[in-house]
Length: 464
Image (cartoon, rainbow, N blue to C red):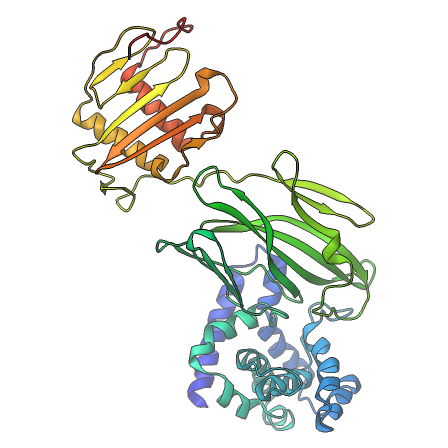
């Protein structure tokens, strides 16, 4: 027990240091101060000799073996935002009995990480309260010895940081292309396939209640890759105290997450219900809410959200832009590394308008401004520069046509790349290009036609 208490003390020290780095968010700051509040309040109020009447009723139900009633009484005492004093700590008696129930699986499934998190916060109280506090509040020391296992520490820390993460359970989603998402108390764990992995923190705060997280039936092609863009839908309650009205405000949120490869983030957050001073929310979705939250494709092929409640709102989820990267030694094109193109590296670049620049490294020619092709060879330094620009634009990841329709012909480009025995041809228009594609075009044009002059020529050359 002594070694575990030393670990807890070290955790408290680390936790408090982390708190001060979170001052930018008042909500996060408050939730991470739970253990500090416990100790400070205990020092002011002295030892807990008897529990308050409401908690005593829950304890009586527990000892009578009515665990369902005990859970219904004690859980809101521990989890809910305190009425009248949002900075108050949860009752140590209720917390200890709730921890014991999750320890033994009484009234709920056994949950040792949650039990440990609850016991930890009571331990902070009893430690500060002295022998009287330790002696009167049951289960704490024995419970800590049993359920607080070293391998559970990361999950316990996550639970304590966000006030026990009510309703958050493990979920798994398998998407196309071998992508796999695991959601648990530590956040989103994404395996994008091909060895690409990413950890994204959870967006749950103190007194939030998660209701559901599901994969939407809606998905769209990703115009920057051969994969698809998927969507996850989260329903959760937020609970806060309105000092102006002196009431607890409960809001049910519908949050849509956009998932593309290893990228995941909220794309829309809509309030479906607002309840003033109601009971602590149930983990069940209220009737009619699921049907009132609609994610669909409209006639234009856009992803549209629609809230069919009395306020009736709608909006469009913006199509994601391609993530920007810079060339690095880890970036690859098929066949070679970024800093050294393969011996067969060659490109064919076709600007389909205005000056009609046409570079063909396969033939070793260039034509532009309507003239016939002439012999043209890039230097070793120019080849390396062009190769790096192609890697940064991730040409081999793009679909064959990247929104090349529409716009003036002068805005349309086509690029064929060969490297290490692999070929890729991609077409796009200027309006659909991200910074890396725009930089690639600029790199090529600066090499082949650095001084294009004013105006445009009459048409493309007859011979290429």
